[in-house]
Amino acid sequence: MPKEVYHKNRIRDAARECGFELCGFAAAIPSPDARLFRQWTEAGYAGEMRYLTDHRAQIREDPRQLLPSARTVICLGKVYNWPAPHPGACADSTRAWISRYAWGDDYHDVLRAAMKRLVQSLALPDEQFRICVDTAPLLERSYARLAGLGWIGRNTCIINQQIGSWIFLGEILTSLEIEPDAPPPDRCGTCRRCIDACPTQAIVPMDNRYTVDSRRCISYFTIELRQPVPEANRDAIGRHVFGCDICQDVCPWNRRAATTADPHFAPRPAEPDLAQLAELSETGFRDLFRDTPVTRARHSGFLRNVAIAMGNSGNPAFLAPLRRLAQSPDPLVTEHALWALAKLETAGLA
Image (cartoon, rainbow, N blue to C red; front, side, top):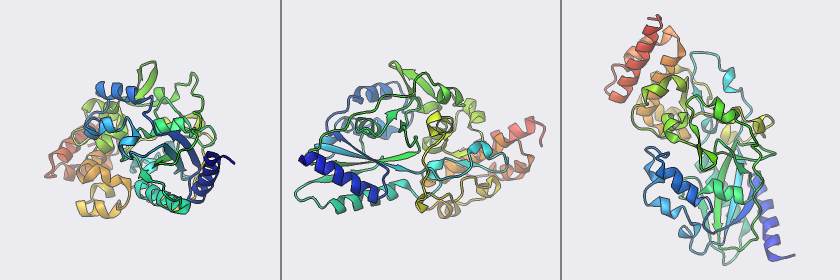
């Protein structure tokens, strides 16, 4: 058996044992998508996410800048789709919605621990490895596509024909030289469901394909943006307080998407009570969402999101908590609480 085939089979078997449903291999050379990434950032689509446009932008173009001896990118996919109601089922106006990927434990920690187990289980002498989750400056979706894990859909998610798109990605750079896998064909066809379903029209054309303009994206507004959410976009956010899954929920490839029983991704909870969220102190926020991705929004940004969700709820029960938020010493929270109050009052709910 050729050396690279032996390595592939051994690594794939070990990856499954460590909880990864997908495993593929790409050459550790500059990605052909580097040009598209530069075009995306030059168009301003990264918004205020400066970690995508600073000195790390150049590092992303070649994985060997992360591991000089790298010859192969081992690309891994882990399903996080916990079987739970579709967000459309959350008709209760008193509840918020949190993106599916943030229901459970922080995936950075879960994936990193699993990849460490994988590297240790291989115990290959004289080989160098570097573990990367999405905080590393690496064009991970590009390498996942090259490694055969899936194609990049119009919503920019990796879509696997058998599993769907509810997948966390991780990479292991290694000095092992392994024959690369082949990328799959793009199977989005003429489908526009994600484009048409996006409330803020964040999926836009670029270079004969589609990309996401972060400056219009609900996930960007509720997670990454540290400033006021543009008023023109607040209505479309609905009751999302952290992230958005709409473009994945409507994707036909997710009709029979794989689910996971991994307790790390069990909801805690998916649709929390808005009134209770509005009462959270900074300490209470950290305690409730400890070790989950939700803490990335920070307490101030999260209360901003809660105020928007209350304003969009059409529920007069939120007048009292919004008036309390409007007295916040944090101007970001105050501004959005006043906006939400004005919206409910204009609707005649005061």
